[in-house]
Image (cartoon, rainbow, N blue to C red):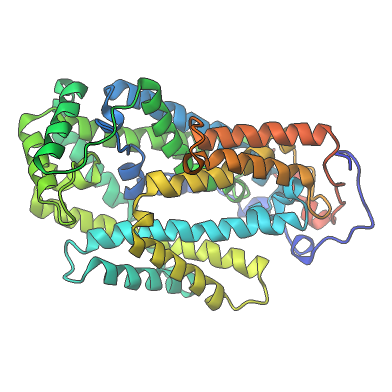
Length: 487
């Protein structure tokens, strides 16, 4: 097996032969496509609720605000430069979607499964997270038990994703404004108290709260590096699948500048501003004696049982008042419905491609049932500890291997490889093991980034050792996107 060889006798699958590049006249500038779409992903309230989450005393603010902000900047840069930029360039050059472009890394047969089918499967993980958090927020206003709402919400999202996504897309353009307005109101109301925030006082306050409410003591505060690693891991784990999907964004871009600016603004800047705002809100609440007392009362009387509040979403009623806060949380949950539908839509498209003989109502129905079970069990509710690591472990090595494949091919798409490309699969398997290290108790710092690095290094070693299947020539119709785009 050789990285440079070609094989003319191998018959490419129909899904590759039928692929047509997105032409230049169908592409749009970054500020009309990539940037607003990615920014909308980060405006989802689950991101700014979970990105800063840690179960240790003081959470990710145990060493102050500045360290948290630095970690967000680093995490944002990793998302843009490592996870998004190469997929975006591959999409730009080829005009082809991820499940086609991925065949150069995993093979014409292997790419069908990875990343194609895997992308669809993981969408149901995101649907489960959405169902869980949105239903809990809706239950604060709608007099229906949260678990009943989870079933209704999940079924509706799956059905609309299959049949009515064109209508949801029209609404989805505007619903992120709810999150923008909420975050601005929160920051304006708390920014004056950030200078008074003391991380040591926060730790002591949390200790007292847990003791007074007969709650189990929290783990000791994280080290400075621990805080840094947790924030970066949360941000990257959240973003990993969207990074690989940069191929699908890139195929709608006109040139390199669109790819770059779309990522810098929609990914890097959005991450820093949105999660940074949430960080400042938490610090502002616990920097104010009055707001701190309100937060403690809210935590003591929480609907699901006493809990120390250390996330901006659940501090909304504390900062903006119970009445307004309840309705804003409700609107944020409603605004999360389009992303839930899009998750179902992406999964349906993936399954239609990879399982063409299976009725999508059956495949998506099974996936939606799993999503609802994840929500009902509470597993999806611990997104930072349980869902983000799996997402990062799955797509970290995919992005790492794709990046090296791109560089080895001279910063271009080499084309599909025959069968299953061993280099890609070996790189993914070893990277995935590293990525799920939190579940294996291996103690690997920042697992999603480590998974990317392992995937990249292993792919390079395997490629240099000749563990790649031959590149297969494809018709000009499919290959022509590279010449059409201004790469």
